[in-house]
Length: 158
Image (tube, rainbow, N blue to C red):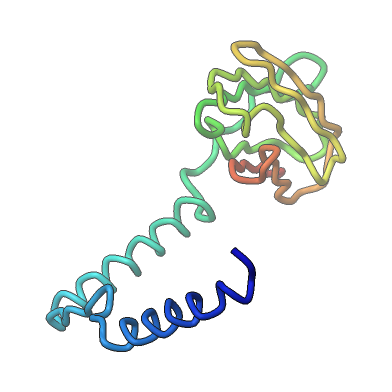
């Protein structure tokens, strides 16, 4: 068939589609919900948002003090399993620190730990223990996090 022969057929199909589209029922309809149910769903959503903000940004626990090892080096072991345990480490100012990470979580997110204030990063092999030595720092809070910045911890120098 040629294009001129198809034109009347295409016009008829288009007219039929336009007529049926204007008279057809919508594909969905709205169902009005009770106000109490709307408030309950909105309240649950707000509560969930607040909980997530607390979980990801809040402070959890008082922190764990590093023990003093040889030559004034402060040491602590951190287990990496869905997060850092402990995630808050307290150390004394003016002394170097050795953080030892033991990774048991197979997630790729926690395969690396980054110390932005120290300009250091450390690859964490699965089921292995890896250490990083950090120089002495002045008092303050120095964050560290996974490669995706989802799992976080802090080094609190007092």
